[in-house]
Length: 382
Image (spheres, rainbow, N blue to C red):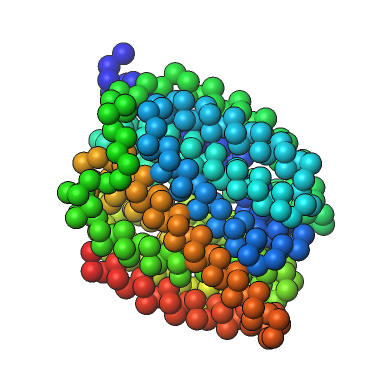
């Protein structure tokens, strides 16, 4: 079999693996912060839960970049840890601190497996990176759509039923590992385990890192506020949360391939647009009289998601020689800034809520939208 045929076969397997795990994650991940708010997590713990998908995932990706494990081993070990953590959540769903810990462990394991997958994708997408990655994320988004809807309906009247989704996801996650066991990794991964990005690559990417660090603080500030507003301002249930995700995911499906080509021709403009569109989500929560305004804002989700899935990763690896350490450095910067922003948002809410009540949420979203739009403009300077 030729190298081209081997590469196509590898991409097919990676696409199937990514599709299955996206569907698994979609059955519970859109509702984790909402469930946390439902069981009464305080703002600082809700800040951890809502940012764990970025902080713990990215930090574990960085630590994974320092190891000498090949991508296959990273996916295996990460999925074992994820399966154990998901199974544990079956028993501790209502126990706030333990819920927070095991959600964090799931995200840590997601970072380990995600880094292994990133190394595979970086290798096998070199011929046509943005188009190949867009196609992979297109199918994963398409597969996630019905799962999000079914998950929202399933949990609509009793969010604690999520524990059965956790135990099912634990089993499927472990089985999915078998898909990647036969994929080779032809790079010398043992020699590329720098602790930090090298000076040459850093000089190329320092503005990219700084702008993303500042933006992530403004972005994640609102993450613990969203589930609180969904419950106490808009009085939503899990199916309505699912509809928000369905609209955003459907928009992503429609636009992913278009932005794959657009990004390849207008990378810097794409990075600005990707950050700017996130402004409108916070703005919707600030000014919408009802949930319909939030639904409308999430039509733009396809723009931001399509660029987030491909644009920033493409810019990063295309402007670095040591791609493994560049990915790891970017991961830790984004992870730390996400936790910082989320904790500032959660703690600020805890303080202000005591004096102003839940009505303070709209004002906080308005200021967040202004901050996001301001920092997004920095990407025009890349």
